[in-house]
Image 1 (tube, rainbow, N blue to C red):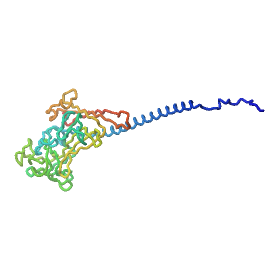
Image 2: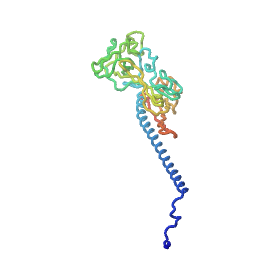
Image 3: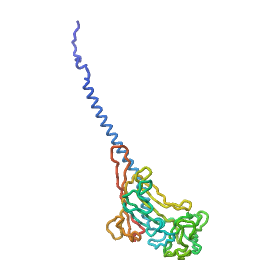
Image 4: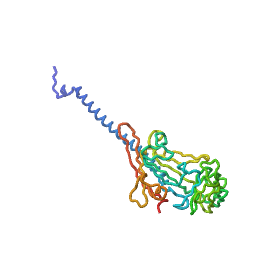
Length: 342
């Protein structure tokens, strides 16, 4: 009989892993895999949230430039800063955008804005957030060649003046400015712009007279003829606030007046999604610190008291997956109101 003489592996060494050892190995492998998967999912969530916030920040930077432009142009006109202003619009106090007595007005989070309610419907202002109202005349006006005051007709230097029936415009020279509504114009066809009183236009003009102060007691009113090189420019009326968008999320909104076929209406437009809050503070000439809107007097709003605005926007990126907090950022900017600085 042949016997085993070599030194091969023992029977125990050839037996392999036991069941217990195999189960321990599987458990350890599952723990490592779960940890790696959890890290991957966490990194993915952070990446997606940060990417969303980055998009919001880029959008808000663009929106801020639009808002800053409106603030820099606030109270401005095409002729000279600090001009006295007449207003021949009929009953201008009945609507916020007809009234140019205050061309800059801030509202703190608890103060309602006329014509813009607090609420949760699309475009409504969110309670507890600041808001701002700005009015000015754009710089792309046209030059007046002649003005027939009794017939309420301007001749301008081009047929491509871009003004239409219903537009609210500001006419100015170095004596004063006047806010009025165009009652007849044909851009691209002729160079005549009419500002008659009465008629079906809303709000319409109370008189043909464009002198200062305003006189609405007769059709001719306070007669004044604007001379050659006076300027006529479209007025801009804007509101900036935090509102609820169509997806139920806070967004930065702009409300502006648009002219559709001679009918004026306020259009609310979403500018930047993800803006949770807007805080506004104002610097009064001679002061050393910014103040909230409720600390500014009516005379300072109506005059040239407020010379700068500090804007703080709170942004929040979308939460990509459940279980984590969305990333928030705060952007701060300061804008000088160049038309109010001496």
